[in-house]
Length: 561
Ligand SMILES: CC(=O)/C=C/C=C(C)/C=C/C1=C(C)CCCC1(C)C
Ligand SMILES: CC(/C=C/C=O)=C\C=C\C=O
Ligand SMILES: [Fe+2]
Image 1 (spheres, rainbow, N blue to C red):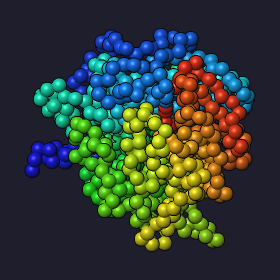
Image 2: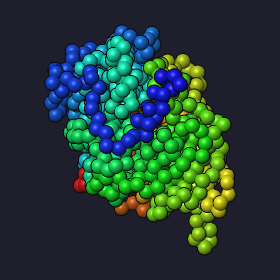
Image 3: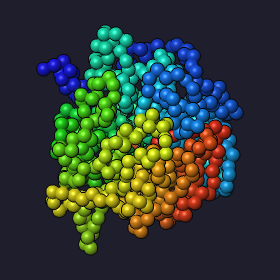
Image 4: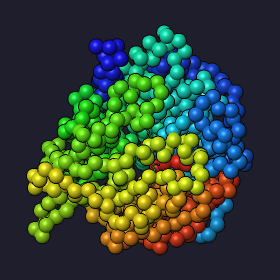
């Protein structure tokens, strides 16, 4: 057996996570705290609480490889530019009338820094975690913007290069010995990134947690100062080096999925609010393929956890490669089949495991139990942003493609994929579009719902859709799953991020509230957009004095909590 194959197997073991191993940093990172920050071409604001000086985007830096190349010009969209902001806070100019009931903080996380000195990342998901917040009170808005101080980010700043394994990039060994060291740290998981650039959630106990797909990339932040507070360490024996980037979080609990790459499957775990200890609930064995399907998110109903097994599966060999493969750390195994599993939350037992048509999704929208006249649960309905079983969405999200829009319609089609998973023992489930995708321009991702409908029947979803031609979702869309229609918001040349639904306190109707999105505008400016969730018309916008990079997921922190 070749060295590579045996290494692959050990890597798989490492990624499945044997509990009890403490992370130590890769060699290059040991001096990260002690040394002063390396000089950098990037402008950063002084560490004042209120800084009147807006940051300058990183423009015109030479590229060692990857990055913007010849397309990096003045008319490049600010959405895909690095805007480094170690600390900025300031009052925002408000256009329109913010509802006075909107009292709290909207917080967004995302990979907003893709450049380090003269080095440029190649994929959207690689960028260093960037927090943007807008705090609303009495019709006024205050904005703030900061980088998360992960070990990966601090090491990269210090050394001017990637020091940990990111979504698509792998640190380049300096010599043979360093290569050996790197392999060793991959086996233990030490070289995996803690760049928590994906989600942000408010836990039931009030802690605010930033997340990505590596377990070590779970970082507690302060929603007011945006300070990086601490690592979030799980105090249990479950292990696991990777997990779903999107746990299900309520005021009382936290559900997560941990893929097992040694014995292909998934562990379902639950954590009480206030605790750091996940409890094992149950296990799902994969039905096909050499490894579990990629699980970025999953849905729950009131009584069940739904575990998706998609044919885009983790791939040990690709994990080891120094250069990104077309599908990064994954591989497409159409022959392996696609499955949906349903686990009872109370017993951990699998109550259904059905084969479904092939699918590709990052984000589940919601799920609920379908009942007959006697109130018996007959099926689970699970909705997701589904990319027509086409993995080329990953290629769409390469920075070069995002920065090089030529007017051609290159964004691959997506839909609201609705699964019906029967609970009567039938071997097959269904997957169909929940509404005509033309309603939202055949673009569909970055969704939110009214949190009061989590796991329950619901009517409305908010997401990013498309106005064609485009290379990235460029509209905000409100989906009515009953009428099977959509209302769309669009501004020419703008890139809006996930429209996050915030209910009006005391609301009864599902869409009584606002949808908040951050928009990177064509003229280089950035603003928080507040839409009336009912009419989907603009109520107000709160303008930043500089442009904002694109960001991914959001949460809402009410003022008195
Ligand atoms: C931003 C986003 O949506 C996804 C980020 C995914 C990341 C950072 C994945 C990282 C990984 C590794 C560093 C190695 C193991 C596999 C995998 C989970 C893809
Ligand atoms: C931004 C995105 C997909 C857009 C395509 O329609 C996916 C982000 C995934 C990670 O959170
Ligand atoms: Fe996500």
